[in-house]
Structure formats: structure tokens, C-alpha cells
Amino acid sequence: MLHFYNTFTGKKEKFIPIRKGRVKMYTCGPTVYDYAHLGNFRAYIFEDILRRFLKYQGYEVTQVMNITDIDDKTIAGAGREGVGLAEFTKRYTTAFFEDLKSLNIEPAEFYPLATKHIEQMVELIKKLLDKGYAYRKDGSIYFRIRDFKNYGRLSKMNLDMVRPGSRIDHDEYGKGDVKDFVLWKARKTTDEPFWDTELGPGRPGWHIECSAMSIKYLGQPFDIHTGGEDNIFPHHENEIAQSEAALGKKFVNYWLHCKFLLVNNEKMAKSKGNFFTLRNLLDKGYKPGAIRWLLLSTHYRATLNFTFKGLKSAEETVQRLNDFLSRVKQCRPDARKKENRVLSRKIMNSGKKFEKALSDDLNISKGLAHIFELVRSVNIALEKDRFNRSNLVQVLSLFEKFDLILGIFEQKPVKLTAQIRGLIKKRQQARRQKDFILADRIRKELFVKGLILEDTKDGVRCRYQSGREIK
Image (cartoon, rainbow, N blue to C red; front, top):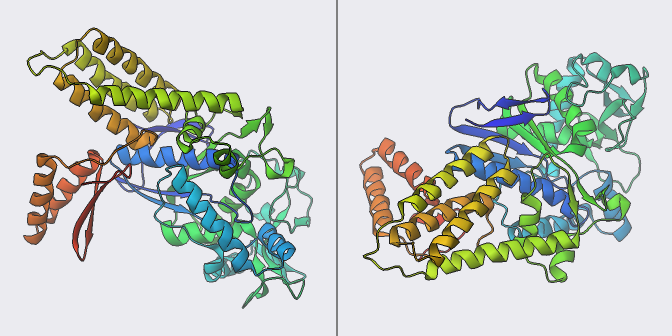
């Protein structure tokens, strides 16, 4: 049974999806005005581990990650460079997807652009105006937070700090600014991007974007909303207020937030000038797998302090693990040798312990400890020549499962076994006979083994979740 720490309630809770076997998840994506830095990728890696483990547990995951391509920062950046907003944001959107691929982050099902969902934002704002939660001032539209009785429950903010009539136009602001926030910004200059809508000429505020896009793709309520802890206030607090005020029902069931990535014990941020992009580190010769390991190996609710010494250690750890797997693969045990049953039990128990650790609020640190313990046991068995073919298959199979979540092991092209090919053929026959229950059961069985089947007009295509090539 999965348990997650829910920021909203302030406690660890059993995870119960709205619809059995399916999870709908929204993850706050990048504002594409620059290259994403490691602090951003700490959140994206945490969300990737969450996604991968949910799938590992057999859930069908629908993940939405927004792309913020219209806000104060993107407009300012395009203005500085003297280019159009679309041209400016496309450059960094492309770079973001390249970085995701470098870090082996699984793609979400949807990456909606804010500029393509203005209509949904306008409709949401109209509902808020109709219900009296929003008001107009100088052509802009604001959300009146005092009228939403549950405001502050996520961030534990005190509404007594609010001065009646105080409002704020900036997309981002600090914890001291508990004011009515902007939903729609009136056009102020002739060169500023705007949309001519029934709300008047202008553009959306940042907070309304995520509400509109998450509701469009996931409905309301949905299961999980994630982000960095800096999103809790004001962004996620405002999302809750405007979404629940507009539709009159709960917005999200579980809120998961990761801690900051620090540099010399200060938050990594572009505003502080103490940030590193993925490209900075790759240019210095560090490998993507090491960077991924560094970002995933500390529990998401524990602060991670970035140092080059730590990155070097991560690189050495990943290399040791890949060397270990190479040693196992190259092992040619005597076929007559009996199975090391003690080792077999350790292998089986390691898998169970790893899964149990991650089921407890993604306790990756504890899970990795079980992997290292298994590596020591296998190395001892190899040195003492107490390792047979059955043990070989067990270890490689288990590490394939580990990597469905970790995504850091070097993988070479593999051939499908006769058993797998037989299952694929049996599923194709079931589909031809319209036995979709059997076909779906086989698809899920193959998915648990790490294989994804894709039905196309040219026939069935298969690939491994880890991205390995199939011969």
C-alpha cells in the first residue's frame, strides 16, 4: 500500500486514487525564459521517480506538465532580445525537452502551452466573476481572497495579514504579500503581447494558467499535484482558491512538494546567481547518469546541498553499479552448479524491501541501501564461486526492475525471449478475435516486465520503458 506525505493535511496518508488503477497527476513545468537549472531538475527528477514508481505498481498514469510561455519573465526576455515571444520561448522549450531526454526523464502524456489555452482561462475567470470571487480594477481582474474561506490551508498563511483592497499585479511574490492576486492583466503598453477577449484586451496572470490547463486535461478533482516547496505559496495556494471557487468542488486530493536544492546552503536560484544548468555540468565533462543519481538519491522531502564533491561521488557510484552489472553479465557459471538458495532469498527479499521503502513516501534513500546490500552479497558469492545460472537470471531480472524506477544503468540492445514473443503473438490473436479482456491482461503482464506495446496502423510496436533498443 502506498503512502505519501500530503502537504495540505501535513501528514502521511494512504494513497487512494479517485479511479481504481489510474492516477491523474499534474506537475508544474518550466517558465521558458532561460535554461532550466539543477534546482528545477531536482523537482522534475522527483516527479519522474513518482511517475515511474506508480507505473511500477501497476497504475496507469496520466501526467500533465505545463509550459509557461507567457508571463512577466518571458515577456521581459523577449523584449530584451528584440524578438517575438513565440520565437523566444520556442528556443528554451526545445532546450528543456533536450535536457529531459539527457536526464532520462520519462515524457508526460501532455505538455500544454499556456498561450494555447487562453480560451480555457477566460472561461474560468468568467465563472469567478459571475460568482463574485473576482472583481475588476483599472481594466484588470483580481481574485478576492477574503471571500474564499479556505484560503491559506495549504501554506498555513494567516489571512489576518491581508489589508482590505490590497492587490498585487506581479506573477510571483514573497510570503509577506498576502493580497488579492491578478487573474487577467489589462494591456498596458502597445508592444506587450495581448489577447483581445470578452474580458478586455490583456493577458492571463500566471496562477490561472495552471488551473485552466490541469482542469482541461485531468478534470476536477484529480489525484496528485506536485512541485517544489517554493510553489506552495503563492502559486499552489492561488490555484486551489480559484479552481474550487469557480467549480465548487475539491481541486486536488494529494499535494506533494520537494525541498530546495541548495548551493553552499543557499537556495539555488537564478535571482541569486548561484545556479548551474545541466548544460554547464555536461560541458565540464560530467555524465547525465551521475547528475540524475545525485538528484534522485536524497529523499525528496530532505534538503539537498549541491557540491562538486557530491557530484563526483555520484559519478563514481553509478560507475561502480554499472561495473557490477557488467561483471554479473560476463559471469559464465557452470550449468551443473546448484542454485545458491541463500543468495536467491536475499535477491527476492531485496526486491521486496526496495519496493516497501518506496511505498513509504518514496523513501529512495532506504531503497538504495537495500540495493547496495544486495550488491555486496552478490559480489561475495561471485568471489567464492557460489553463483549459478539461476542466480544470474535473478540478479539481472531484479536490476532491470530497479532501473524501471532509477533509470541510470547502462543498457545494451536486447533480444526478446521466446516467452515474450509468444505472449505478444497471443495478444495479437486475442485482438483479432476481439477478446480485449485477454489482450489487455497480456499487455499489463508485459508492462510489469518492463515492456510497452504500442498498437499502430502498421502493427504492434514494442519497446522497453527504460528506452532500450529491441532487436
